Length: 358
Image (cartoon, rainbow, N blue to C red; front, side, top):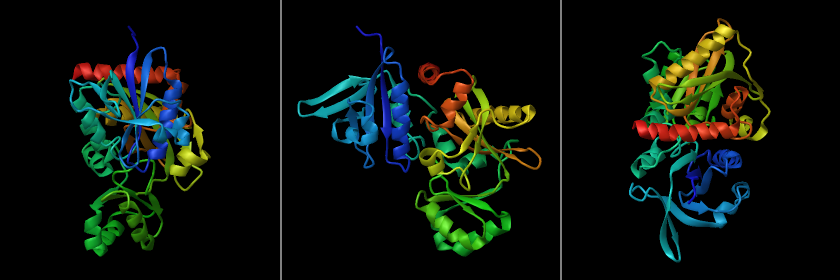
């Protein structure tokens, strides 16, 4: 009888970050210890079909997983505690001990699939339903943190349908409350998809429409002149620990999707080029925000440090950050002495810990 854990790695998804998810999953699969885990590779297509793929991990990058798979899905019934696969021979079940979602964006880190994991009764890596939803929605996260002493950029948010009904009022409010440049973002999207830096009022309508293509809620934030820095947080809510601070020297106007995943041309500085007291303030604020928003397992917390007075300004919290070979989250922990494989083991341990704590 095998003592290995039965681990489902879920990737893909109906999200603008589908391709990034495939890259993250490929890195995760390459670094999981096969002596410890029986791995089940579960892909979700862009159309939302669930497939069990049993071929080599390289099949994620060349599309083989789409062609050489069996229809399968995670059962919401906790007595199944695993996958149901469908084939010509009928349905069968596959017991799963733990789920590792390598998913980003909508339906992957917004609480949707976490709700399914909760129904299934299977321990899973990462934040629970509410914290996932709250952190994904920048308008809600900003609003909750505005009641604390954590600095954030000035912002306002609105629904796309309200803008289309009365664009002049919304545009006037943006110009009255915020100084340019501003960043126009979909409230619910990741990896800078749909984000625009806007220098002039006349460019706002195009940026708002671009963001509205990704989400029905838009947030506009005042631009911050500062260093872009990030902290990896790991652990249960009360036991959260922060990595050292990393810094991004973006090659584009801002650290966008291409820069993160395609060009790889940004310079990463680990540790960040900060005074020790400022770096410590960033780390403390990261853990504070993580706890306030109810995070568990992992999150990457992104900040600006203003050039003029070195203020620490929180940008956003990402509850399922990129896990590609060039991603900041695993790189920060590697700098702290935790290998990629050890980091994965720790995240899986935390999934069980959180399940025990309820």
